Image (cartoon, rainbow, N blue to C red; front, side):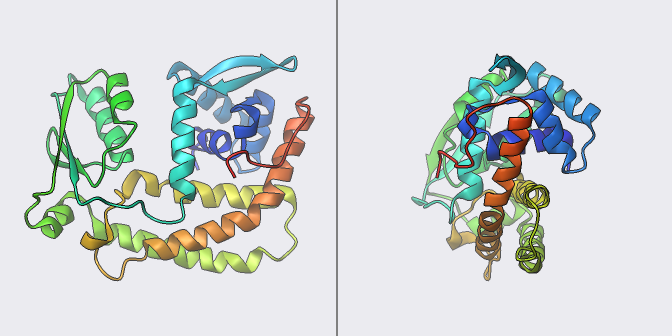
Length: 272
């Protein structure tokens, strides 16, 4: 678990009721519970601030960091994708994006990572396809300062073959099955009287591993996926385990924030 990803997980998974804000000391403590050293956390927060995801903010007389407007939008959207109970519906239309040529390697890598996260696969050097339009597309690509055009189509010949060349679905299926197997085995630990700190660390690792699928799973419709597809089984097992661990994990987060001087804590999530 890298510090930057772990910071995103903390803010997105536990800090919505604090307006996505926390004292830096609390963030350090929460990541230390996952084995991440304080210097790595502080470096990650500093870089995320420079990148426009976080901003320094003092609340209750305590120095901390809050997610920016862009950061809050990304965290809220990621939370919905992480915890939705099933793949979204599909209207039969494919969404195609054609970008301008990136000006350099850095921009190309950022465009590739961003479109991959949003569910798009590369058909050609500047042509991408997804099963549905992403509501974040305009903001994300504008932020990368690259031009683009889009269109939708229902005419996708040999769709299974084309999609198999665009995404490594065999590898994705193997990853889902491995996650499902590991999460099923994890169930034996959930009734063993875990402390809040232990539950927090266990849940953080589980969410972190599941969140990686957001970057590699294009959420393709069932009609074009190989059968049987283990994605839904993995999702069901994740949601069950994450739900079982949520209560004690939130207790640890509340205690950590209270120790850093944050009043009026709650272990409830306003998103449900």
